Image (tube, rainbow, N blue to C red; front, side):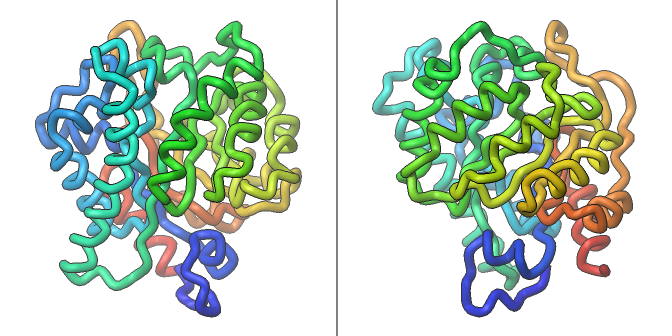
Length: 310
């Protein structure tokens, strides 16, 4: 990442100065440390039970070269916690804790000698993540935009109050849900990025990416748009479309290339993620680059080395 941001240390300023390295998958890093994530709350369960494990996972990515940690709140919702008997007050505490754990990892990384700027992105997963049935890879939940906005706004307010550097509206499968999220972030005082999960040149719900990205073009809160939780081969075309349609910095963090099988709650196939590909994504216009599911610290280190060498 280029370091000269004219005294402005915000993530938005960094994107005008160079390329920023995102972290990799939280779940695979926790699983590699021996944690069972078969619960419907996924990694969010550890917010309540083993928060120190989440800090360690973030720290591993910072030390591997990531500039941004994405919090463990992807599947953390008031509704999901309620299913486990966790009340709204405690759920709000856990959402805020997800931001603080990432901040603590940044402090520990800097105490160990990391000198570059580090940022925290508060993850806001789609409605389908709360359902824990793989529907974030389909969209089309049968809810209106108003209903989706009402679902997202309360936890967005809690996460924004915890003062992350950015809200990561991520793995969005449907342009209608994106519309709801863009409405829900208004007035929160925290910038956001909007990232779709895609299949080829369409959202998972089947809308053309050109139309999906266009919704964010005039949203002042949105500092970047892009794709995540998709196959690596879908990234390049998505980057070019996002640049052309919005003119904003582009965020990309694909999966390893393996496929998620919801019924088995497992990944199948082989990894097709190659860190050296990221140079091409940067050339196409990507400015925040990392990995999602099944992309670990070793791959993030390769991403960082490739981008910083350029």
